[in-house]
Each structure stands twice: as structure tokens, then as C-alpha cells.
Image (cartoon, rainbow, N blue to C red; front, side, top):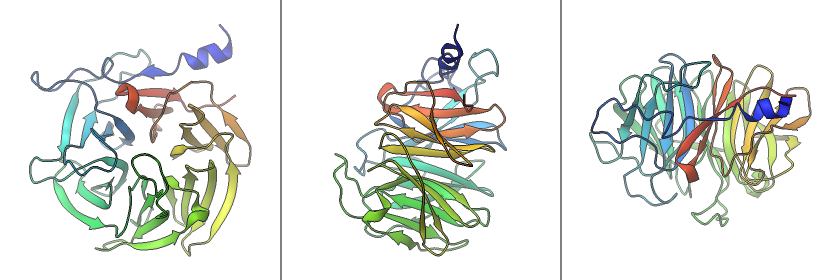
Length: 299
């Protein structure tokens, strides 16, 4: 088998078949349009945001699944899954179409159309929310080391038509309101984010741009992907990885330059997560109601 063939074999389904062992017998397994995945390294679980409906419809039936990772090395199912761990319409929770997820301290932050919602990291209890005025459909969510929360609005409606609300918003530590860090068409419909102390790294939907915005709101271009519709972004020790719907793939942006296309073909991927302990990217496939894993390597 060629090296490329071995690499393709590393994209293993973690969706309904792999993660179908439900914690309660009456709870059906699987996902409903999973659009984002986040690894919680403290609890060693995967958090999967399920849109479960149209992207911008406030139907209060979105949910977040809490999933045990697959057994490392053999692809067997993990210990189980709490499918509707945090669910709209239950226990006083409102959750319409969750997308970006971020963790800081004991809080889970969730981007949900035009509100950023906060939940207890361990138990999933509701903690509060911050409205984003005028947002069309929030996508990315990221936490900086100091607790600053960043969220992106690509300015796209449910049919991916531009609305002109392109922006990156910031919620300062302990804050109860959001402020725009930067907004405007030059952002290229910002989707996924990675927050750092000096600012936030961003990928765009419109033209596949990868860039940085510092804490003062200054944008610096870094690279351009071969295809557009970038919707996910994670950082590893060696590189940044971005999912592309137009390219049906994952791109690797080297820390010192260069772009590489990983060989795994992924139809309409969502916002990827990263499991550093296992060296795997976690890529949701909303059209298949599944999550797949891809080795976070290159060459």
C-alpha cells in the first residue's frame, strides 16, 4: 500500500456506527447535522455541536453531544455517548443551531446564531449568554489565554448569500456585552477562529484566506488556500489545519510557510476539532450525520 493509501485509511468514521453505544438504552445513537467538534482534554471527551435544522432558524432543538473517544489504535467504539448532553428546550436551555465551541476555565462557550451561550464545563448547566447585535449567523468561537472570547459572523444567510454583517466580535473576561474587534467585507466572510494572547487567527469562506487580527483590530494576511469555503481551523505544535467545503479536504498551513492538502476526501466538512493526545483531527460531516478522524500529520 502506498503512503497516500495508508493516510487515506486514517480517516475513520466516528459517527453513528462508531459512537453508537448510548449511555441510556432508550436514547438513539448518532448525530443530527453535526457542524463542530471540540476535544475537552480535562475530561477526555469530544463535544459535538448538532445544528439539527436550518442554520439560522430559531427552533430551540439544537444540541451538544458528549462522546467518549474511540479506543486508541484499533478503531473500536468508546465507552459511550450522551447524545443530548446540552439540549435546546430542556432544563431551561435555549439552543437553536449551535456551531463554534470554546472552553476556558470551567465554562463552555457556544456560538448560536446571534447569541453566545455559556454552560458549565463539567455538568452542562446553563450559566448565561451574551447577545451579538445585528449578527446573521455566528460561526467560530475561540477563547484566548486570558479568557477573552472571540466569535465570528461570516455574514451569510441560510442559503450562503452575503448579508454584509462580516465581523469578529470580542467578549472581554467577565464581560456581559460584546464589542466588534473588526468588521467589514475585507474579512472575507470569517468563519473559524484560533485565539492567542496577541489576537486571533482566522479563515474565510469567500476566498479561502488565512490571516491574523491582532488585539487592536489590525488584519495581517498569512496565506491563501487553493479552494475557498474554509469553515474549520485548529492549531497544533507544528501547523494550522483548516477544513474546506469547496476543496472537500483539509489544508495544512505550515508555521513557517507553505500549504499542503491532506489526501483524505471529506464531503462538506464542518468545523474541525483537535485531539492533541491522540494526534487526530476531528471533522464533522453534517451531510452524513457523522464525525471522522484524520491524522494531523503531513507529507
